Image (tube, rainbow, N blue to C red; front, side, top):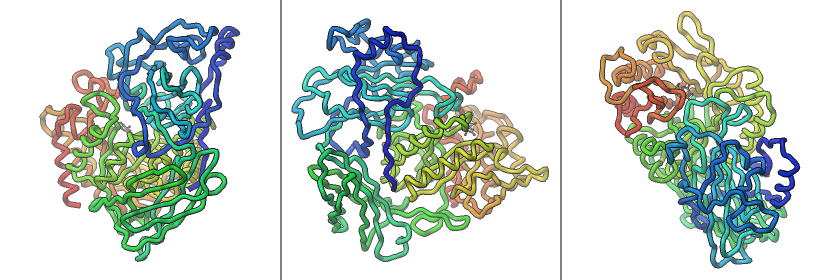
Length: 612
Ligand code: GCB
């Protein structure tokens, strides 16, 4: 685990057209140089929930972003230089967490800026403590101010961030303002066009965290894979501390294993350790054993529940705890279709994981961006393995070095959030991309990810037509040059839907140019739940059912097939999909409809997984 400093300030596209007047306005907004601290495992820390109703101001021309509209101001101006043109007093409210699009008809397709405002009191402030505003995710760029001071900007719609407010918080009348902008742009991740809905706003929990003045902000604990076949296993760890006066030692406890170990903390606030344990019960889908872990340093105590497993490849096999495993998977978007919103609660996670379990899955592809932390935590408890990814998706600007930096930073944040989750086994670095500039970008991204986390496997979902050679005799060889930098070959293949009929699956074969395991990361076709016809009528449940039967038979023959994640568990919102009376804004490739009803193909895949 390498320590990488995340500097979250000043990452957004700044607009240059600031007039003198605006500059004057800007100087009245004092800036603190908030070096943001990455804080993991917030659910097991002391916090005040700031979810609920937030007031908001719509800013379609983005004047707030350039300091024009003084939305930073409270209804009670802090000094005479404040120009209050707008007060949040009379503003309407939006619910947090939640996408703004799902809450007001006039915001259904809104893309742009909205300024959120929340006032709160905080009793019993302690000089011994530090306070942070934590945001689980806000899509896509967030400008955070607290009690009139700008703290910084965070870019990336799916990863968490926190800003320190220790010197600013008071017992009464605090106000936090978060300007969120979800405009799509070519130099962002994702870029301009995606096959999913661009839910805007503060989509995950907001918390006021309180921690001791020196505290454990993050830690990385994992089984040493080389010890997997030994009786005595090794657990490696690193703890990171934040604070001016750091304690000299930290203690790691695993009560169930009688572990209580003291380790030294370096001047930089890092301690690394290796613990040897006997009789370690490994985490697996059949037995998702989690151990209570307690980390103590100075006045800080952090608890977590962590599973221990190894994940590796050997030739064409994926080995979990040293044994070959077939990944019975399904792809998933992070959406609750019943609410037409991003998923954002344990209940949302339980709903989709329940369907995946019923399908017989031991694996889920969390497409195409980091999903809510609740689902990863619940997968740990239920024994479901996960593929996680960033939206390095269609249309990425490979040649813009700032885009590569954004990808690295977003990946670091995702790894920092989920490193300790046994369920998470694969980092996928791209989806359906190709070409030389892309290779350079992805090679650099892959080596960055390995430098932050060398305990997991890397893959990328390729596109068969892009990543392989098509021969007239229907034999495909997957030979994408990026494969040599990855551990697992993955490709998406829509034969029978985008081109050809399902029967053509019988003629196709797939091989790869390397000795690595293969995952079919997408296949499928659309069906309108409740539309029944013959198996050659598109959009009928029967067509999808037939396509699943033929596709599964085709892929099952692949030498080195180590798993699959058909597209997709649930119908999902997508502005790309406008076929009237069929799609109506939904991608219909789900095995479950947006109302929660299963389609016939669900049972085809269920039967296959039962047989594996
Ligand atoms: C793909 C994409 C996915 C789309 C899917 C489709 O290859 O990776 O994001 O939603 O195809 O339905 O066409």
